[in-house]
Length: 137
Image (tube, rainbow, N blue to C red; front, side, top):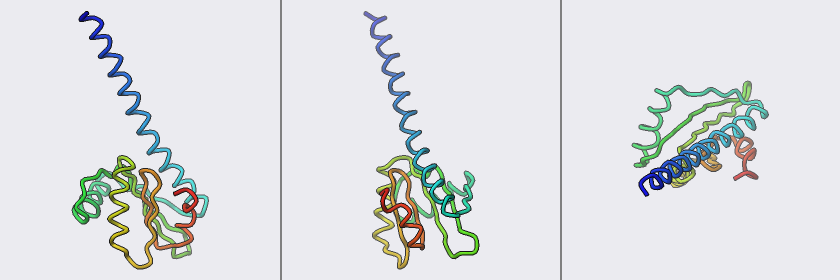
């Protein structure tokens, strides 16, 4: 009886680990799709380092909007010779991205476009950039 219980626990732990790994890939894949789309449109993107990401999470997201979310990746991009700028914020999951997106939409900054794709939030002041994702949101 004890061996069966132990075997069942090992199998359940393995399934939980597999599900957790699969979920992480979806976030990364979505971020990669966004990056690919922007680069195809002429954007040069920079990945922010861990210190920058943690500062952004603490000060530009959680404290500013009263949230408790996890920014897992952060990118900033621009198009050379053009006034197009974008910020890509990848959150832990879609629920956290929705919380951040909702706060940004309540803020209603003039001229800013915000797009949410699963766990990725895209912030820009370029309508052309936002339109790259309108059919995907």
